[in-house]
Structures are given as structure tokens and as C-alpha cells.
Length: 545
Image (cartoon, rainbow, N blue to C red; front, top):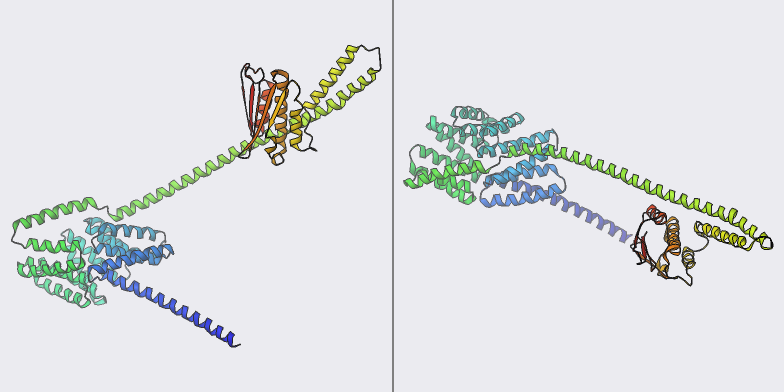
């Protein structure tokens, strides 16, 4: 009893321990996702983005493997965001396209619509970065229809304003940002508030400079509270631009250098390029300014040529998918059609082969009946007549001889068409057949006849081999004048091969009825037979069954 109690408590302890480990492991996973998503969305240094990318890349593979679609999409979103922040726009586009294809398989569920909204918004940003304002605006308006929260609407309004800003449409830029600004009291997210304040301040930079600086500084303060490095960088860039426009190059340079310092910490080429661009513009070196202008022009042209925009690829990929599906259907129809035709052909060949075998069997049965009737009705009657005439002197001797010859011919014909004696082993019957043609004029040599597993061969095949060899021997006896005949038997890949050769007078090889019969018989059991002969060069045959 004590031992049982100990075992019971030990089992309970192990189960509880495993449950605790599983719970801790699950919690650790949730904490990891939360930690790395924060690194992706609010990086403080370049390494944060690198670590986040490695984490999500690894987890994408895992979630795809276990078919966890929701987590796959979540990780793909973070991956696309990280790549965008790192300036890897191509990779970001590819990730978004991959996610949209996956979303298309989910139907119009609430979750699918919500997650598609996020990817559309990110895709719009990518379009905007690639200078396709029309497509970007179209995507943002689509996303705005899907928006269900204040934060969603504010972010989309901000993105739309950026499109108008890129087109130098200050009126629409200001109009859309004011819509977003009015929603700030309902916002809880500090960074989103800072985003609208900062961008509205930049809009006022040209028309109301006195209103611009307080908004930009207020945004900077909010970002410094959250300690979001990439967003603080943006505030520094905007302050550098503000003071540059005001003609205060020293203060502009101060903020541009701060922005450059953050860009170096983040190891972002695009961030460095922007900060250096401001420093170059406010520089006294005309060559530096000319270089910057030319470099920007070349970069813009290369960027427009280089990027294949994601939404276009996505729409094209959908068409390609439809075409692929159509092609697959065609392929399946072709495969099924080929399969059906193959079955019909196979069935036809099988039926033909079966018919030939059945006909061959009928031939053997008919030959057997004829042989039996010749033996029973003709040969026996001749034998009885001969017996009665033996004791009669009135019958001429030549008539008796003729009757004897007729009797033996009848018996030979009967024997030629008789069936195999099934009471004896086939090896014995076949050996006896061949030996029956062995005499003082013709020496018949047989090699390896016993190596063939005759009992494993179908009855019809054995009967055919017997009949064919019988016809060859009869043909040899009648026409060849051969003194030596050789039979060689062999087994190769479950096929029986029989080689016949003699040293007879040979012939000009034309298939007479006898040879044609042998060929028909062999083909009926799906075998092959070949003949080789010339005048005075003997006769050869090879049978393979």
C-alpha cells in the first residue's frame, strides 16, 4: 500500500510539473512575441530591428509548418514592417504580397478583413515610397472603408495627407490632417498623437510658421517620453527643415546632426541619406549642393525603374493563379482523357489477346477431336480390315501393303493433332516427342531442357510449345535432309527461350502454311518466333515465350 501511494503521488507530481513547464513555456512564447513586436514597431537601435527580423522569420516557418494562419499573418506583418524600416522595400513588398495571398484563402471573415486592412495600409506606404501616388491613394481609401477604430482612421488620414503632400497639394494635405487632428482627444496612443501633431506642424511650415514650431516640439516631447528612436529621428529631421526654411542654418545643422547620429545608431541608409541631404543643402559648398541635386535625380529615376510595385504584382499573381487553376483543370482533363484512352486501348489489346488465346484453345480442342475421330473411326476400322485380310490369300500383296501404309499415315496424322498426355509430366512428354524423331539418319541433341520450371508455365503455353516444336520436327523430317538437329533451352527474366538449328538443305525463307501456323500460335500467347535460313545453310528458329 505504501509503495502504491508513493507511485500515485509521484505520478501526480510529474503531471503537475509537466503542466507547469508547459504553462511557463507558453507564457514565455507570448512574452517573446510581445517583446520582439515592440522592437519591430518601436526600435531604439539598429540591432533591435535585426533581432526582431530574425525572430519573426524563424517563427513564420514554424507557424506555416503547423498551419497556424493567424500567427503566420501576424509575423508576416511585423517582418514587412521591419524590412520597410530597414529600407529593404523589395523584401517588404514580397512579404506583403505573400500575406495577401494567404488572406485570400480565408474568405471574407471579420479577422481576414481586419488583417487585410493592416496590410493594405502598409502596402500604401510602400507605394508612396515608390512614388506611385495614385495607387497609394486608392489603397488608403480602400483601407479607410475597412477602418473600425479611431486609431485606424487617424493613421489612414495621416497616410492620405502624405500622398497629397508628395503631390504638393497643400490644401488637401491640410484638410485631411485637420480631420485627424480633431480625433486626437479620442486617441490613447501617444505615438499616433505625436504623428498627427508633427505632420500638421510641417504643413503649417509654409503658411503659418508661428503655429508650426509648437506642434513639432509637442510631437518631439511625446516621442521622447515613449523613447521611440526612429520617431525622435523624424522630429529632428523636421526641426532641421523648419530652421533651414527660416534661414537659421546653425540650428538646422544642429538638428540635422542629431538626426544623423540617430540614423547611425539605427544603421539605416535611408535615414542617413535624408540627414546628409539637409546638411549638404545648408552647406556653403556649391559642388556638394550640385552633387546632392544630381544624386537625388538619379536615385529617383533608378527607384522608379527598379521597383515592381507590390499591389500590381499581387493583382497579376491573382490572374496568374486563375490561369494556373484553369491550366490545372485542362491538365486534369487531359490526364483523365489519356487514362481513359489508355484503359480502352489496354482493354482492347487484352480482349484481342484473350480472343486469340481462346481461339488457339478452340483450335487445340478441335484438333484433338479430329485426331480422336481419325484414330477411333478411321485407323481402327483400317486395322480391323487389315486383320481380316491377313488370312485371305485372294487379296494381292500390294493391296495389303497399301492398306498398311494408309494405316500408318492415318496414325501419324492422328498423332500430329493429338493432345498432350496430361497424366505424364510435361518434361517427359516433350522429351518423348523430340526423341521420337531421333533415328539412325538424324541425330537430335537436346541441351538444358530440365532447367525450365515446366510445372510453373501455363497449360496453354506448354501446349503451344509442344505443337510448335512438333511442327518444326515434322517440317525437318519432310524437307530438310538434316543429319544433326540441336535444341537449346534457356530461362531469362522468367521468359523461356528455345533455339532450334539443323544442318539441312535450308530454304529460300518464305513462310508456308506450316511456318505461318507456328508464328500464329506463338503470337497468340504473346510470344515471339524468328526464322533464319538460306539454301544449303541449314535452318534456325528462336522462340521466346
